[in-house]
Length: 456
Image (tube, rainbow, N blue to C red; front, side):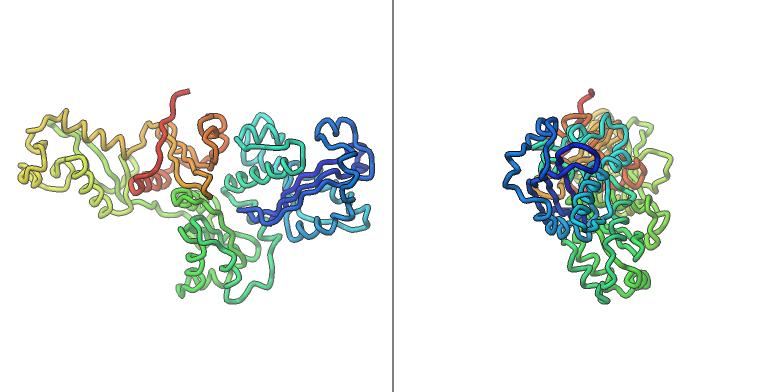
C-alpha cells in the first residue's frame, strides 16, 4: 500500500517551514482507496514568492486546522504505507519536522518518483513534475496546489509501476507490508484478488517473486494454484507469503508482460529459460511458374515467417480458413498433394492456379493481400486494444516491422503526438516469442483497431 502525497509550505529557513496545504491519496497499486486533503494553518508567515507560486495566502488559512488537529488523520492514512512523493526527501522531511514539534516520532519508508522516473523513463528533458507530466500526456489541474500535484503523482506512479518490468517496486512493497498472520488455508490472499484480466506475482516471505502467471480471471487462477495437488502447486502453497497483481484489461498486454517478466525475473517455479511458445510457422516461396506458394513448416529461426503457430494443427486450421476466405488453391497452399488439379478446382471452387489456368499475377494479388494482413514486416502501426478501465486503451507500437513495446493511454492526443507516445511506451524485446504472441492475437481478434503511422 502506498500513501502518495504532496505538501505546500510557507517557505523560509531550512527546518523552519510550516505546512500550508497537504493532500494524501492512499493507493493500493491499482486504485485510490482513501484520501485526505486539507489546508493547514502554519502559525507562521508565508514567504511572498510562495504566495505568488501557490496562490495560498494567510487570509485563506485563518480558519484552517492547525497541524496538531490533522496529525492523527495523517498517521492513520499513512500507516503500513510507503510514502510516495515527487522529491520525497523534501515532503518527508517536512512531515517529520512537524511531528517532531509535537514530540511524536514519524517514520515511514519512502519512494521518490523523481528517482524512479530517471531509472524507468531515461533521457527526459526535465524531471520536474510539470514538465514530466506534459511530456507523458498526464493532465494536471491546480499546478502547485497539493491536490493537483498529488493526483498527477498518482497517475505518474501508476505509469511507473507498469514500466517496472523487473518488479523492483512491488517486491520492496511486499517486504514492507509483510504480515505473519496469513490464513493457513490461503483464503485471505484469495479474497483480496480481483476477477480481472492481468498478470499475477506469487511472492515468498522475503518478497521475492517465485512464480509469474497471467489469467483472464486472476482470483480464479490463484484459487486453482492453491487447491491443485500437483507437486509444483504444493511447493508454491508452502512458500507463498503474498500475491500481487497488475491489471491489464487486454489479454494481449497480459501475455506480453508475462513473457517479458518471466525472462527478466526468472522465478524459480517458472522455467528459467522458457521454451519458445510456438513450433510452426507459415512461409512463402515462388515456384517455377511464378506462383507464390504457402507452406506450414517447423519454425527454423533462419527464415522470416509470415506468421507463427503454437502447433502444426493450428497452422493447418488457419490455412483451411484462408484458402476459403481468399479463394486460394489447395495445391499451392500444401493442403492437397497432387500432380494435376486440386480438389477445389474439380468442384469449381479454385480458379485453376494449380494447372496454370489462372494467371500468376491475379493469383499472387490475393496471396500478397493475405501476407500483408497477417505479417507486420516493415509496417509502422499502432495496435489499440482494451485498457484497464472503461476510459483507457492499451497501445502496442510496431516500427519498421519491429515491436517496440506497449503502454496505456486515455486521451487520443497522447498517441497522436509521437514524442508523448514514445514516452508512454514501455520498451520490450522484439524477440520471436513476442512476435508470435502479437501475430497470434491479431489473428484471433478481428475487432482490434489498427492505426497506420504516418512518416514524421
